[in-house]
Length: 272
Image (cartoon, rainbow, N blue to C red; front, side, top):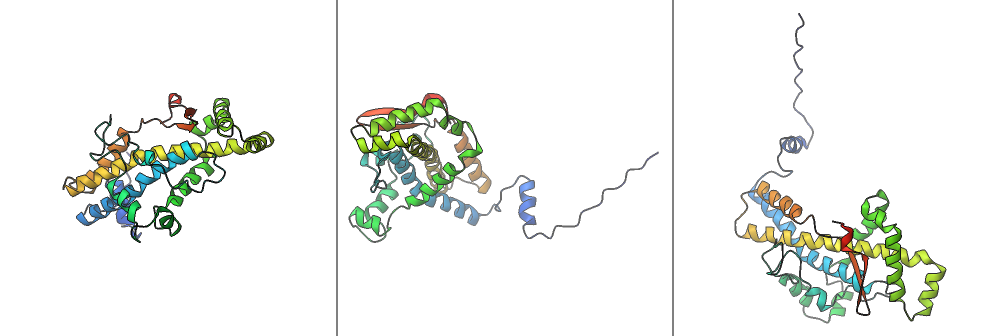
């Protein structure tokens, strides 16, 4: 008859983050469920959501309108059309409404764009003084996606496909129509503008993703202000459920040239 060897009890961990590890292993949240932590979490999300509402609009503006402008000096000045562009997950006409607020740019964003911290000044002065939304951050995030595209995935594979190259070529020729200098450069270096179009497709990709995240964060802030979250776990459940609810939104890249919409990445490709 064999006897079972009793398991050796491990001594309590002395690691400085042992409490965090044990809480995560037990299915808890990274932060303890306290009112102060809940307030800080929601505050961070709200503070992020306001500039994010500008990021997604301007990223789409650059991908769809600025496009291959060789001197995009005003790419951080999206048109009123894009500030009024309805968020797909807010407003009365939304098919899947996440935030109960308006579909156009957030009122706090518009107020900051008008006055900044220096007071009411011409837009160009706010821009040059860096008293504005930091779009360089959004572009840095996009650059990180672009630089790591070689890690693979369906999106990367499509950007290397013949179908994508044909759509990009059509857009390049349409954009530079009547510009023999740029058309000549394109003929000499056919990969140069194609690579730039690929980068612009990542602008569109990130912009469409942040269009999803902004209303989720805005709604979380409103629910917190109404006292609707019982604690950190309830807030995290809403965040996860909100993201999954809109996980099927299409990722695409359209460009508008001379009144024509050219679908570089059509919605029918099924990227989400």
